[in-house]
Image (cartoon, rainbow, N blue to C red; front, top):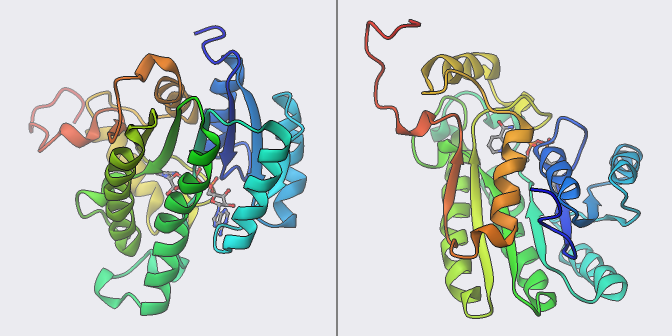
Length: 264
Ligand code: NAD
């Protein structure tokens, strides 16, 4: 895939540290020749994100809290003045109160429901809306989702409801922006041990379950997600939009494992 992304410029949102899915994606894009900008949430993360960006040859590192529309406007204003044109964006952002990522969905509070939907769903629409204006030669937008959108998974709760809405947003955005040559897709990643994932109850058990029950008998890495994101963000996938692409070692196709499966 050498220089697949030569001449393309894009924004990576949601990098927190070198365990982040955004990091796996950024590395794959930089390896393929893309020019990258990064946004981070809050001053505390700047110390982490700055050096990582530098490692990939990027000196565009800008603050953005997606709960604040002025902050999103400022980010795209800055990008507009630096680059003018944009080819892709990666949205690797999600948030819900940890206390509701355990226990029962039925106990969800209205406050956390609204916050979860705002940060994890609306922000992708808000960002795509602004990015699209800069994608004058077409473009590609990718967000991150999880199987908990499609099926009930332990502890995922309100985040599963939010991811279902996010996947529906991907389809509506794909239709709206398709005529401008802008594609919108989601990657449904299998469980990966990241900062955000550590907030989910019994996460280690979920990792083990996926490892034992997926067709590939393993968990996926951020580099494997990066490879699939590279495909969706590059011209290899110009025929693909509105899709939720599973990068989960095949877990989502399994109904039940046989009693005598070789490794049970
Ligand atoms: P992570 O903690 O590394 O990244 C989450 C990011 O969201 C952080 O960088 C954080 O700063 C950002 N964020 C949260 N609230 C924000 C706000 N208000 N404004 C701006 N940024 C904000 O964890 P990750 O697992 O790499 O998460 C990235 C995406 O991948 C999320 O959407 C997550 O739901 C999704 N995902 C994760 C897994 C997994 O198992 N780790 C599986 C499938 C999907």
